[in-house]
Image (cartoon, rainbow, N blue to C red):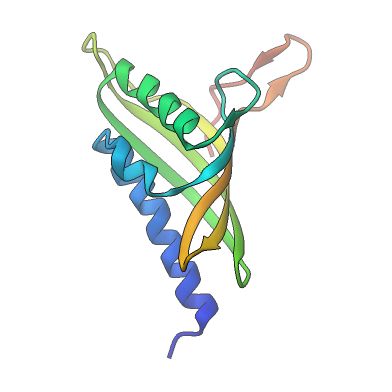
Length: 146
């Protein structure tokens, strides 16, 4: 019989799966269900932070305007789960076909998710996507693979 912690980890993994499905479907309503209303997101795109679910969804909507078809892949998801908070990290990559017909394999980013159990639902309260930084050039390094 599974422990509560194992059940919670399985539920969080399902939530990450729903992120992948929501992105592929360009389903902003479905994605909204995964985030706390006061989510804080440190995304690869300015500004330094996006605060609130509306700001997060606006960021996803912007991404969807560039893609005809979009896929999000996750590698190496590792989770640490407590009673009502959890965090995880992985590598993530957006890829697909751009609106102009160009196929792109995208770039791998480092992704961190922080969850809080709110009304028995594991919701994302913070996420961060980043790329390594080359100090000499002052540019992000976007051609690395896990």
